[in-house]
Image (cartoon, rainbow, N blue to C red; front, side, top):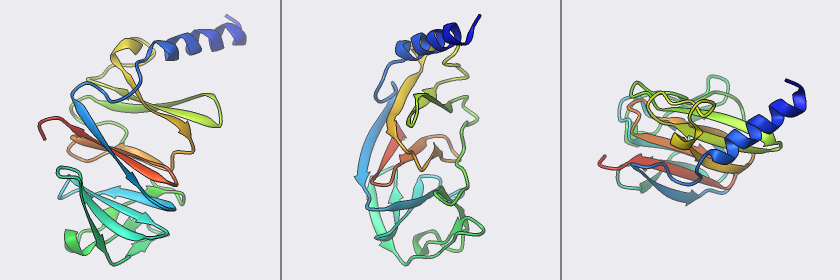
Length: 175
């Protein structure tokens, strides 16, 4: 199979993937001016630290409540602290590097595709599914330019996708 045939096959697979919010999840979008970093707490796994040019906040992904706090992060170690989370060092990801979880023990995963780069897609794959093998079971949750950070919380009940201007937070229904 040649390169052109491979490209057509991948584009056809990507076209089969539904777009939007995955079944069993709900989504809330927060406007953020100048997003720089995101990070989920490993102890209070429903808490997401959001660092932007406007300051630092902690979002409770269970209630969608956002609390501003004193800015405290280290771009060299890619960690942050936030008063609402006590002394915990939160791993962060964003423009300066780092990464959030791409899979969780429940078998859910996230993957990327960029068939029309620089536009990128983030694909949610439930319960060990692969968009290559069963695209109809997956969901494109992001289809835009320049995601800065994306991934799951440690517990796997929350996921976030951040761009320079907003953060999409997904919550498993019932959590």
